[in-house]
Image 1: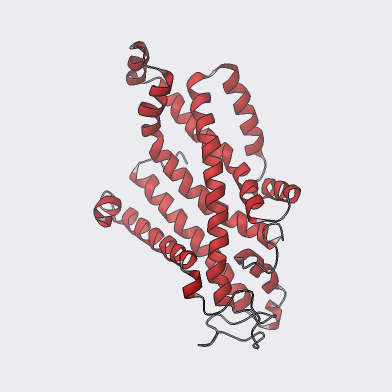
Image 2 (image 1 turned 60 degrees about the vertical axis):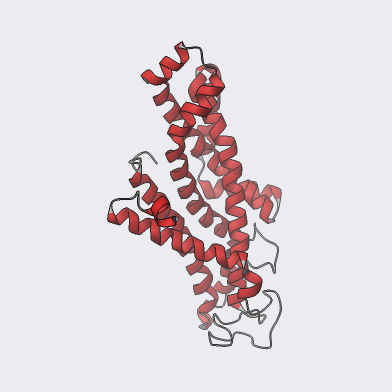
Length: 281
């Protein structure tokens, strides 16, 4: 059933391989997050007697300077990063998509005003904008999600607005308008289903980028409060000891950040190839 619904429509082998690989990566991390208490052998903030222990059967990913088991912190850290990026994606899409629909469909002064605002936000480098907002709000996962959501609202807005403008001039929409259908009905039942593939692609790629942004904020100390397990925070702590030969303190958190971002990026690329919208995203 899973294969028939999600994988079989991707007829090209490269797209199918990207989708399967991306889904596998994301599914593994989601399982880690959901079943963290049963997977992690130690409490992620409980000190053990082994400080700076290298990877072994006792500590699969070694321990840090305080004796925290790195594997347990990686497992529990998946909860933080998934929570932050999904909340951020939901907030940004919930604001950006409706604004894009309204702006693209109605046009006029409202469209010009919203476009200027969104273009102004979009002009800022995403990480710098997120750092600015996070610094104002203070470190916490919820504040980090809000900071990241501000960055991606213009992305949803611009993509949806462009699609709506293109669809608004088609014979189908013009016919529906001439029949006197309500604007709400046209937007929800006829325009939104046509832009759904674009929204899925933007969602996947924005989540991939948000993972890197969240890790960057955590690395700068703007996301979680120590000693909360977080991949970006552990990277920040581990870099101090990298020259001492404690490579595992940086390698495993960094690897997880990269592999999870790649997972969502592969899903987004597969979807964009499936719906022939790769050039637009």
